[in-house]
Image 1 (cartoon, helix red, strand yellow):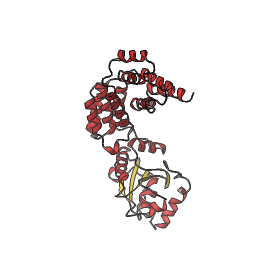
Image 2 (cartoon, one colour):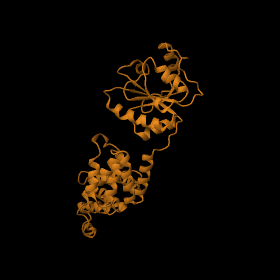
Image 3 (cartoon, one colour):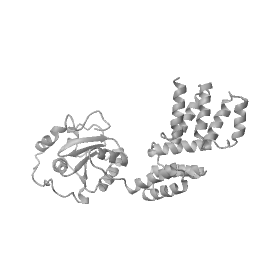
Image 4 (cartoon, helix red, strand yellow):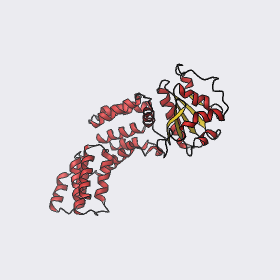
Length: 331
């Protein structure tokens, strides 16, 4: 199972078909669809199952199409996040995947036989056998990657295409155009963290910090662990830190007058970052670390890490900074 310590298709995979068929005394002929039958209608793609109907819904059904089994319970918070995502992805698969939901509070037997110890737990069945699975809430993109691994390819949704294009425009500094696309994404999904965070980044780039803050304030607390939100929040903090540090000439004069004026050099790094000079900002912080690694409770290194967070892991400035930091820390 993906994200766990064992393989779904391995130790117990071979016994599921026979074990369930015999244990539940289900008539494996009645209602069984022919392997050549057409995909189920949209209304049949998402169903609830019971202990008695599990074999027909899952074991037999998986001979026609991939079946995802979603083990859930009414009291499970992550289940409430994951199930709508699974339903959305299944609907986009155009009949290639069926979702079978099992409430383990009402029907615990199957989950117990499959060794489910925490929920949500999702198993994929093909040809009567489990082939893979995962535990815990997953994003839409992660669910699609999971299905791709087992041979079900689902193209990106209109929302995903819009967000990808918006990101490309923002990376190319086309902030107004990117902002329009992020706004369009929010008209589809008003609480989309990616879109809210991307729009905040556009506002920051255009010097509108208050609007950026308003966007980030709209992100629910339970979704603030997303990478997009973390990056936007770090970028906002950087913008606020660099306020009043516009006079680069004065800061450079202070550093030239006293190379050990680490506060002046630190402020210069913030100002350079605010002006878009990422390598210059990195160089100033690296110089502080080289001269006094413990200054301000390791403040220069911590600030450098915040730069990386705000710029993004793959950003050229982050790559440059990590290389410089590694060379000085491990030299």
